[in-house]
Length: 361
View 1 (cartoon, rainbow, N blue to C red):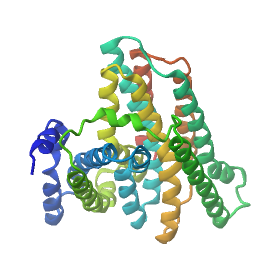
View 2 (cartoon, helix red, strand yellow):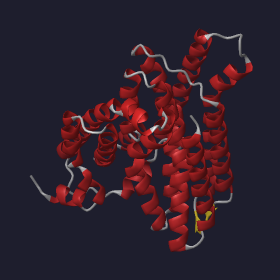
View 3 (cartoon, rainbow, N blue to C red):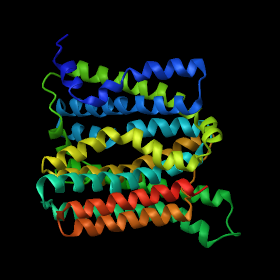
View 4 (cartoon, rainbow, N blue to C red):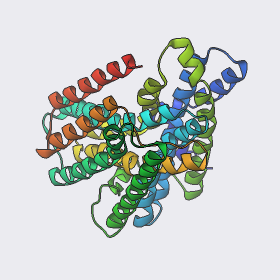
């Protein structure tokens, strides 16, 4: 086989973490400390999630524009989706709901913040497509509002509604959100610059030596790797909570989003440093939209099929943090300019929330 694809992969330092997959399996069989197993398996998922993204991008580059858009819009958060499905099977619903909010917060505050911070330090004031970012932010605000409806319903009707009402509402909202997601893809397929197409992300990675067979092989290998490592990671959650005293909520809102999306996060930051701030903003907002419109509602239906019904009811602090992050993103996108100070504020806000989430039990 042509060795150029392997050489290309080895240029990215995160793929040096792939051998940790074997380490995680061995440690799991030896039954060492659960926190160590969780840490090693989490680190091992990072390159596997990156390979899913690389394989998807390579297949997209070799496919028609419409299939390319569909692949990018569907597999953008595949690793996190796999992790949360395993968590649902184990009944860790609080972790799953926290990971949904944590993913959106991570994209809008830490990814966009670090992109603006490092991009601003390197390039000064950066400009991005104000109109597109503003339009995408409006759709993000609408999506966050839809995501909040079951929670607001629960808060406003305490003592009146029962679990069945909340579950029916969650299913109804999820169905409509998936419908909106499909309409967004249709809008993109018709040649419009929709927020779900993310076609320009293909420009980030150059797969000069990637054949279709190699790309599919990488995608299969990485997906199987994430499945195996997710089983190991989720299997250590309860023991780690008991050992370290951290909450299931904290692991879900901070740990799962980071390990599932760090490869894509690094792409967003790297393109901002290369003064392509429009693409960086597109990645951050587009990934958040995928979580809100596709991953979250898909998990609601999957959980019902798995016998552990998941509702879109979040605690008040999660909702305040979500709405605040979305509003701040909309304000940042309004002027079409980014600087390192705005980035610093976004990162600082994420760290404040992370501290609060750690202390919240």
